Length: 196
Image (tube, rainbow, N blue to C red; front, side, top):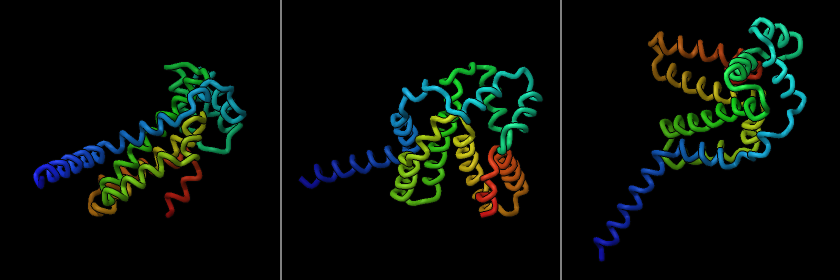
């Protein structure tokens, strides 16, 4: 009787460990399930229409000139969208795939980072909280810079943690500087994160 109970306990423990190991993937899959897929094809709203208009230009110079005239945000996410549109087209679905992919990567990376730095239960809570956050779900569907900013913020957090744990490594500082600059060139709101 005791051996049966012990084997079930060991099996449940092994199952929990395996689920925890794959938590970043599970969180990304749950976020993917929460995406309202009909919204991928809905008409673009005004700000998304500006993003779409930048994809019609033939050169990066034209994109940068128009972004400078019409936007109050840095140009990097618009350049990413422009490159994406050159390869995959500029339909509503194609333009919304960029933030969807960035958001899913952000959720997976953040959950992985939490697993590396927090106890198992707290890491699971952190990953699930980000996954289920309504604002994050809406960012996954908007052809703007919100999801790329989220992804770069998570990468910047990981790079900063690397600098913190390796204060004598010049390479860690270089990685952080590159990622922080990329984040800043994606969203000016990132200044608050970078100064924190």
